[in-house]
Amino acid sequence: AFPAAFPTYHRAGAAQASGEGLYRDPAAAEKGWIKMKNTVLSLMKMKESREKISMLTCYDYSTARLMESSGINMILVGDSLGNTMLGYPDTLSVTMEDMIHHGAAVVRGCNDIFVVVDMPFMSYQTSVYDAVVNAGRLIKETGCNAVKLEGGAAVKDQIKAITDAGIPVVAHIGMTPQSVNAFGGFKVQGKSEAQAARILQDAYDVQEAGAFMVVLECVPAKLAALISEKLAIPTIGIGAGEGCDGQVLVYQDMLGMFQDYVPKFVKHFANAGEMMVQAFKDYDQEVKAGTYPTEAHGFKIEEEIIEKLKEK
Ligand code: KIV
Image (cartoon, rainbow, N blue to C red; front, top):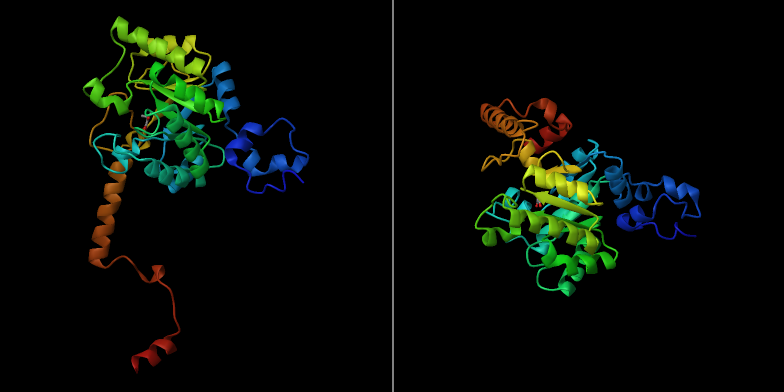
């Protein structure tokens, strides 16, 4: 009987379907895979009730497990993994396979956190068809709950088509890193009247196209606050001030693990980088001094067996 016949019911579909007495077996509602705390509906409700939404990037299973126990609402498997995990200077080289590899690992570590996976450069700009096919791959092959893509008016057809396919879309406007060459560098966007008006129009366009959320990156705080007031969908800021409906940071940035460059908007909530270097140093010293490992870290064998082996 439904849903027992579907033991591997998909997280994303289940999340959207849960909570409305849809299941014949009421016990089914107690199962983890249909009892996710954060859904498109709960996130929209958070905006309505002016409750801030927390989001962090994440790219691997063990970090996802730690975030799962923190109360964070959303994870973004960002294409920033190109910088933070793969050491590229920008996000342009990141592939669909990279996103699927990391996205699936993160999803395996999550129950309640709503997971969004980034669509990499050239996986959606080329055509509406490519956008739907690639968004579908991200959902099917990672088990994530939504996809994110960069751009406003220029990608509204893609957003509409992906949304029409039943895939929730997070839009991303302002300073969109995949356009770094067009911008002439990673620069704050929307300071002039013309730029600010274009970003506001982009915000309206992505909302109208069906995006359920929009990331505002590196735009002036007052512009981000105005957009947040005007839109019905939640805004998530990064370098966009305090007036957004939520916030996202790259987790290595907020933990002080990524020292190549530190953007102005980053706050270090811990100095994990320093702690890690210290731990690596201590390990190095102990291994070299022979103080690690000790007997306590080893496995035992009968002395008799060793004695016999000595004779061979
Ligand atoms: O890839 C990413 O991490 C992002 C955030 C900076 C919003 O898109």
